[in-house]
Length: 575
Ligand code: ARG
Image 1 (cartoon, rainbow, N blue to C red):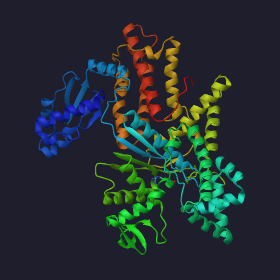
Image 2: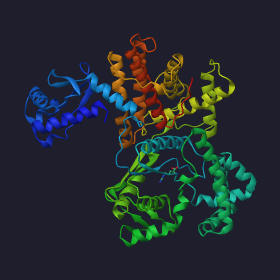
Image 3: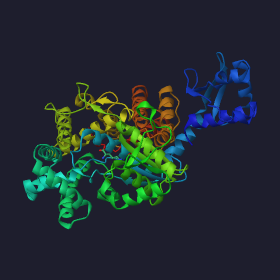
Image 4: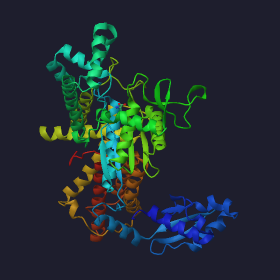
């Protein structure tokens, strides 16, 4: 492990165990960046009470047992009991060399897990909306990060492609005419299509009657009804795929595991749960009552898996899905990247699955809650007319606006179009990723496209700037493999930031928090700016210093590119 904070934490924990006993081995050593050294350990202050000793005494005992030979150049107690830790130049140089020579930039192989990532999951009966955009972007980043760590990632796009609304949708399709209806669906007109069908259903009893009769035909597998449904889904998928391609998201048709896929198993799911006593009949409906969930009046809250009319719902499908993911896909961990409003649903699904024995203790299921995207009015992001936004148009607008931002650059038309696409998509994706996934944020083109601040374009620009240094020197960053010996404070700060990369990637996977990687990359770009402002690179007089600075710059470029790649953000060579 090249990360100094991780290495120091381990050493301090060992010293705690040696000084105070093994029960102290997992105390948090509280390693923090320090003003007076590289890092400081604040654990002596936090342990003083538990040990009934003065913090400075604790610090003293800790330091006596601390083995940091070869890592630190200096260890000092300061103030009430801080332990200041100054790394040795040689150690930093050696870690930087390890990272530079390692294909995966110091990220260590661990036992691979099978990680199922459930994300995107738009509804075929409605338009894909901006909330689905965010689960798509966050889920894709998480899938990429796990793959980078060597996990076996299984993407699952849990499309809303089944259920009673398809009765009225099929009838509406027949009314409009198959050809025209399918054309509209492929063009992304699903929402309007749905609304028209709904309006007729609510106002026209004959239509309502037809729609109701269509439902059992679909559920019974009537060939003509199934043919229409297939066409409907196929054409809707074309639109989803266009959005995915536009965004550069890794989802393809092979990852589709929509609600309809589970249809054949729903009866069995209910049978098994009823047979094992996990589900019981309540007012005619088959329900699971997971302990600890209560509604109004403290009454136990049901997870309804079969309605009293015999119909299955969203929860039934998710019970079938979780059983399939554990039993058949052999998941060690399942991430549900879905809107925060569904929190209760997933808590109940996980609890019910644990009751049923379908989700063993050693399999982790977690809801990665996605917060709302708001408009400048603070309400859910929609167009001015109140209709939801068509995603292809929104993404096109991002690209157009990116072109305007780059207007003063003298590229040829083709290059300009390509860069604008990368910058536009990078801006949209980074805006989704850089705030913690469960908080809301305001969708604001001007802010996300800014070339300064914590934005996608700023980071893309940072890579272009490093490339231009090498171009100016007639050099290739891939050849800049000199020995990194940081001496100036800004060089040291940059090197230490670089060494933090592997630990951040691991943390992103562990906590399912891509915004940590964004924050890290932003820090890194700023550390590079600080370095570049105070340390001449191409014009450094000493040959060894120049080599070292070129190697530092090249490593920064690699880490930025790798980090952005993990976020799913493409990077133009120039900007
Ligand atoms: N289609 C659902 C929606 O748009 C999301 C599905 C999420 N995944 C799941 N396994 N329930 O709200």
